[in-house]
Figure 1 (cartoon, rainbow, N blue to C red):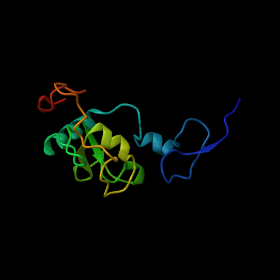
Figure 2 (figure 1 turned 180 degrees about the vertical axis):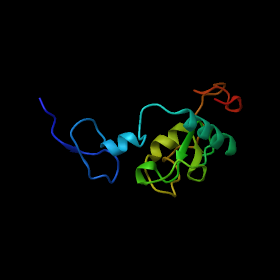
Figure 3 (figure 1 turned 135 degrees about the vertical axis):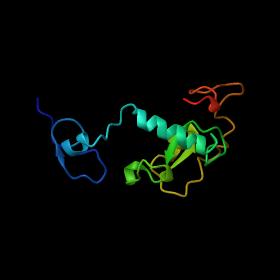
Length: 127
């Protein structure tokens, strides 16, 4: 059974796709949403270290690097467009444009349970 043609999942791309979710141009351009690359992990670590492992939105413990201007809105993977963010703020923000003040009622205090080392271990231990 053939699948109905759809539009490429890359924001703003009008290409028609018959197989997969992205047109060949965006598949080849490395727009892979699965997993991360060594380069991304290095950049993320640099951003978190630069920001002192502190969420720029709520002041909690940052474990994510958030795109200020979302990739979905054309934002680049550059240090100037990335800030340290806690998981809660990063996931709540999504592709919202700046300025974004954090999710309602979130103070950052509940990001990591007391005594927890979090997903990535001690913030100063690196990745």
